[in-house]
Image 1 (cartoon, helix red, strand yellow):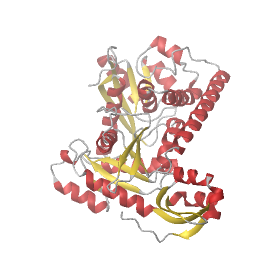
Image 2 (image 1 turned 120 degrees about the horizontal axis):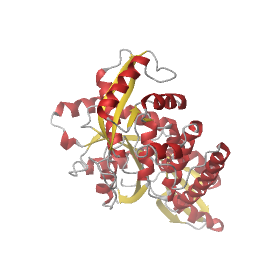
Image 3 (image 1 turned 180 degrees about the vertical axis):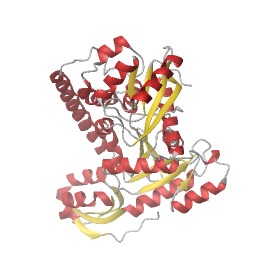
Length: 432
């Protein structure tokens, strides 16, 4: 159980509308995940209720009979809230609260609340506030100020400490200012990236709580925040490390993904996730000990596609192998995912194999080019050293000859900038 400050933990009933014929195991996993989200947010689940329907009721999600059953369950359990696994419309929330006389939330509201509690840096706080306001804008009839006075607790952490403006125009004005602030932060991030753009870059992605931060820590020996709970990491962490060849490289870790991640969060965290888009190779970290890891892989791949990163070379890294007793599970995973790597970040198992795979993937995805830079264009040399990996340099009578390695997906932009200096593919072969 995760204590959130010194506040007493609230009680919640979780609810879900199921499609007819839904797989009971999948339903159970979705509700278990919602329970974990509430645990992270500071609430304990005291009951659950589901209904099979062709589609949710437009006014109350559940049918009338099921709403009455839910009211009876509330009388027995006395929860502070009811939380639905799928997103509710503003009208559904309003109607349910009138019927049930308790706070009604959906999964998106809980996730946004967790992000609000975990945001530490200016960038993360700005991104979360923007996502919250975008979520709240169509829900202005259910004002957060009114809600916090009536109910309080989980799902009522407004963006910032000041009273939220209830006027739509004020909301939109605030959102515009937040977007402008994020653009400024993004510009600073681009400047920071320029200083390290010549190094191979890797990005850790994965379902929340897959062990990405733990892997970052063991690969880089860095002191990073690790907590066994959902969304412990919101801010991007970039650390340096060495590949087996001795080549210095960078690896970044950022927010974990989850099914039904609010679209507002994906949009507002785009600048944070840009580290993933800029990577030469992505490490997709999977908790192999989770029985639903295949679903988690699908969620992450879908999110990467939405971000436009699905074409980046990716290594599937199965973590937590120390928690696996049945070795057949590993054999099945390897058969389904050729080229994957099995590790335990917790026990430091198989890390050299992972590093070798990372180096091979980077080299396979990169292209070597020969450049000839005349001495009168020496100002370009410093830029080249910052932008690409220099494999070899020869100082000739007419200028400097370089063999450089370029990430494949950056070749077009690189060629456009330096076409007059490119002499062709390099015959240089480094020992790695």
